[in-house]
Image 1 (cartoon, rainbow, N blue to C red):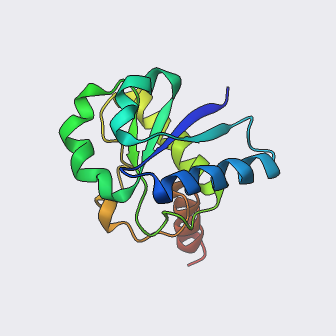
Image 2 (cartoon, one colour):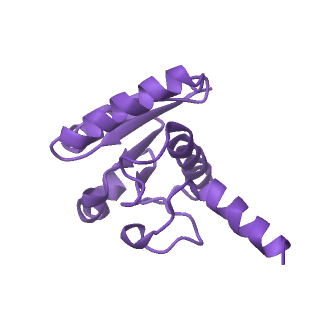
Image 3 (spheres, rainbow, N blue to C red):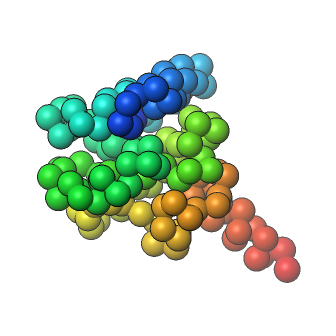
Length: 142
C-alpha cells in the first residue's frame, strides 16, 4: 500500500513546491506504488490527518510540532534542513517509509531515527537508509 504523505510548513511557499516536485518525480520514476506526496498547511493538518499516513514537516516547524505532537494520530517527521528541497523523491520516500515503521513500533511523536542527532543538527545529504548503508560499507572496507 502506498504511503499517503503530507508535506507541511507554515506558509506553504516552499513546501507546496516541494510536494509538487516530489509527486512529479515519484510519478516519473514509478514510485507512486510506494508513496504519494501532497502539500497541507501545518495549521490544517490536525483536521485532515486521517487522510494521511505520515506528515513530513519543514525544519522550521520543529518547535511548534513539539508543542502539539500529542494531538496527532499519525507520525510527524521533521525533514532535516540539509535535505529540505534538495533530496530526491526516492530518498524522502525512504525516510517516510522508515519513519512510519518506527512510528508503528513506538507511537511516539516526533519520529526520529535513533542514531540521528536532533533534527536541526542532521548533516546527512541522503536518506537515513542510504546513509546507514554508506557508513556500513565504509566500515566493512577497512
